[in-house]
Length: 268
Image 1: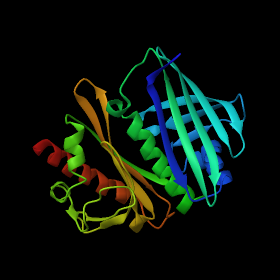
Image 2: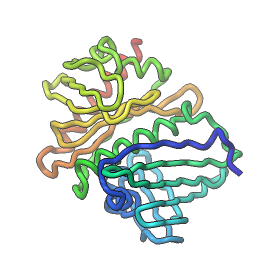
Image 3: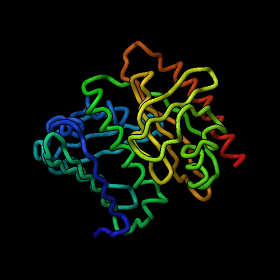
Image 4: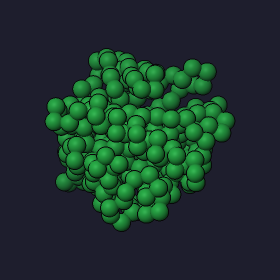
């Protein structure tokens, strides 16, 4: 039995055929290039795929409950002490695009507001990264970077820091109009003099994902509850440029930028 509060549905249009999108959701090599750090297992009905999230220190074992080529994928997992979670991905062709509809159903005995828990925003962000991969970097390996700090803040305060000129300039130098929606162009300069620019991939209730053209990749500003009044403040992303850009250098820059964002958030 699923509680209606725990059903999240998101939709996105992909400029690619269903076969490519289907591969991005079912083949371990492709899943690792946009979603999780490591996937083990064989993608067949009834089999288990283990999704490893290295930086968060956990794995999720998904049973592939249903798979219709280029049309539908259903993953199920058992959450200890909570119940069964079901993830359904449906693909529909609307030439030249593919419409992806994702639904996550949570068990009735684990009720939470999808906006406040971050589930709604999290899937919108994930779909935007998947779209960027399928449309622009399909088949290329991804090198990732990551930074995270614990903090206490409210989501509107954080959102102000990446949706207004005043907010951006408290921690980076904004070189474009502040983005208001997905598809808007943005450009910011880091303290090192390096630039990040491109299209906004997603702008949600409290998170943002952005293409980072200078590194042939993307980056995200994420936040989520961690218990009580505490939240996690996170920056992460990836580059598809091979050896052209060193992820160690990018991560060092991101970690320094995270400290600046944390300081701006603390002062707000």
